Image (cartoon, rainbow, N blue to C red; front, side, top):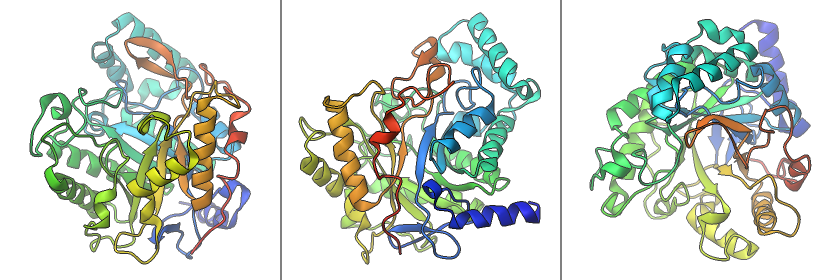
Length: 409
């Protein structure tokens, strides 16, 4: 990296405009993520999906990459949780053209539909004509870098597809106890570890890639993960695979039950001795994640999240670490007074009270293919279906002071 550009990135560490910052290497200090000088870096991210059958980030059939990156930066986000599949990570050299051709069968649509979709991608982003899957990820990440946006690479699934359920074959470690084909057939541990290493290697070329998460929304069925033994075993292996490949990266670790439960760490902390200042815990939250009435009762919601993961923010404990709510979301049709709005306000209060790191699901206005439909709308998406602008101009105001930094080391 040229010296002027490097200096420019480092100067951004002191910026307070929506907390936009850039760092070469981040670490943890107690419950906070910090830059090399020890100053807090608060993740205020948006999720950009790239884990589906086409193997590349969504939206390129509608807008140039840089248009999307510009929107992210201009709307106050300082990071992107960029998702990918192990299928893609193990085949980064595949041409985009071949990926779209193969996606037709995998996604359950016709070859002509996928060919037309690929042509739309070419028309908005001509570079894909000669690009590989890795080339698209590289281009997206570099574009985000040019807008001072940090990137957290998230392994969402093994088999490229929509997530998540206990019948998609992506839910739990295939080699774990209590094998269940419906939940685990595609989650092969050796391939998963190779995929993590592949993406950790890719990250070396991008100074704005500051973290990688091990796996999205781990979930079990009856007979799996007895006493959490498999979780500790395979999470340890995944963390080591990333750290041994690229020690600069933060390692983001979620729990069980669709990333709701890290309660096991209270009595049995994870061994972090090999990477003592690199682990960030993650948790998810949606209105349907809890029992009846919990999501719209602010005290009940705070207690439930606190018991499942929020306790990890307590300083000076064997389990203490930053806690990132890496997914939460609501329909963009919400309005004051409805249940989705009430849930969001309760969640906002909780996140504000803890000055928590967070990432909204989702950026994308639609998907190349989902549920066997081309250009299927994402009702939680911040962007319109054609990615041309904000779907609900009022929504970002509903986040209140979540973007403020009120606590630090």
